[in-house]
Image 1 (cartoon, rainbow, N blue to C red):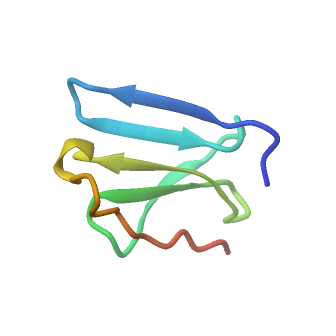
Image 2 (tube, rainbow, N blue to C red):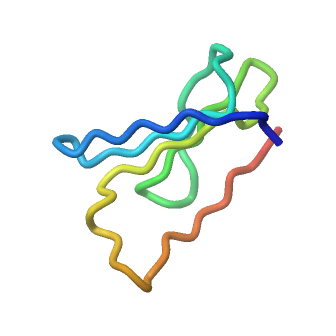
Image 3 (cartoon, rainbow, N blue to C red):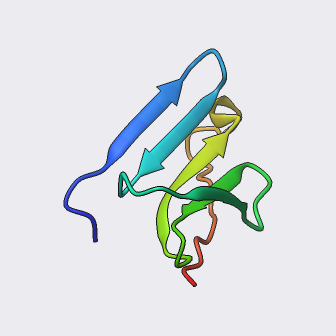
Amino acid sequence: MADKIRVWFDAEGDFLEVRFSDAAGYEKATQHDAVMERVDAQGQVIGFSVMGVSKFKKGNPLDAELVAA
């Protein structure tokens, strides 16, 4: 588990990003259309992003899996 996380929210873009590490990485698709995972060169998950955050209603959580290499 990360010691700290960084969270960004862009209300105009309706986009949320959470990072567990400042390491270089790239975005990778998940099985959920709204979620991308951020992985490092070894394929370890170092964060994730959610697009269209406002579409998710209270009481109806977003469920997605982040899969480490």
